[in-house]
Length: 334
Image 1 (cartoon, rainbow, N blue to C red):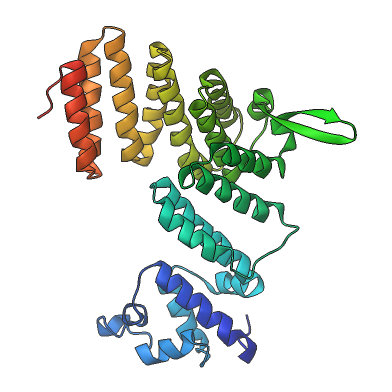
Image 2 (tube, rainbow, N blue to C red):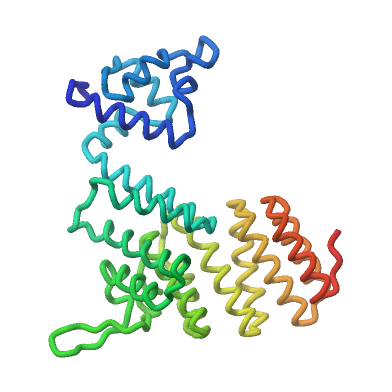
């Protein structure tokens, strides 16, 4: 890659963006605040680079990028397609906030996301992300379930219209709110599409359409099992689908299925160390064991679930579980 005057603003923008994402100070990245062997350039030099005032030499640029876990090739890609990459990075941050339940903070970042220059109206995946996020915020912030359902449906129709059953009205196609579960089982979806399906199933449960919610979740699991999927997709969606399904099965008093589903999920999640979801699955399985008369395994699972809650330091939740265990099941947790 040849570094020219026209590249300096993009180079500075990229370095600053990644540095801030990694929560590094200029002194830490430049090495000025570290031991001499970590020194790359002065903080002032780095500041000038980030502001697009100076072009770094190739050795300095290579070392700065290396400390950020990036390469010259990554930078070249950013220069060629920088706004799209920034959009995707910001979307990932929003996704993490949503996963943690920080919807207000996610909405603030989403409003900034829409202001980014990357607005390719022909890019269906870009539009799908925006529509999906609108649905999430309608549901959790505005509590408008009907509009949220429409947003989620419209988001997936953009790329996978056959997901929903449809009917002809003259020349127009009218999509119903009924999902074709066979189509889901037989096809692979993107990470965003799986998130939409999971949230749609969750809304079905809210609408008290539990059988539909169960069918959708089972079909997503079949899609996981029958196709070769990116491991990242499984890690980010797998646990949510199993957790959602186990909750609905518990509500429907289908305890044997709950135990089976929770066991499948626990075996996977122990490997990726997803403590928060593990805690809830152990609690659900424990309740199911007790409901079928297996108190020994039930009590064991509830205590394991409690221990996982302590590990991710949600002490308020831990106290609630301790109280529920005592009142509903007569289990004392020390």
